[in-house]
Image: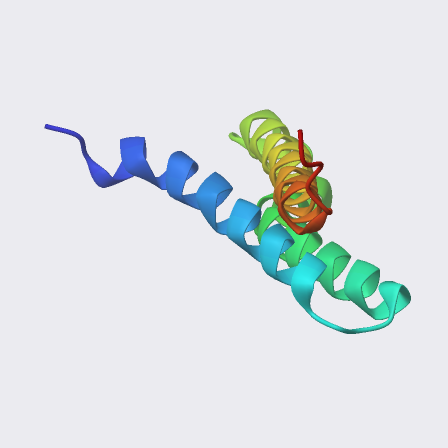
Length: 96
């Protein structure tokens, strides 16, 4: 049986894939889409990065920093994957 801690990383990545897909289909200006996507990707890792950067000598500062950077990278990759999936779905199909 899986615990919440084992399921949460996959749920985090799935949410960002869905957010990327939805950002692709929304009819906003590309700058607004990029800004809102960046804000959504940057906000959760800051909960780990800021305490590590404010107190670098703390007990778990290295762990918090690594976790925040990992969340930032994976959130950006998953959002990019969602945008790519939306783009692939929306492009015109070639008939054989």
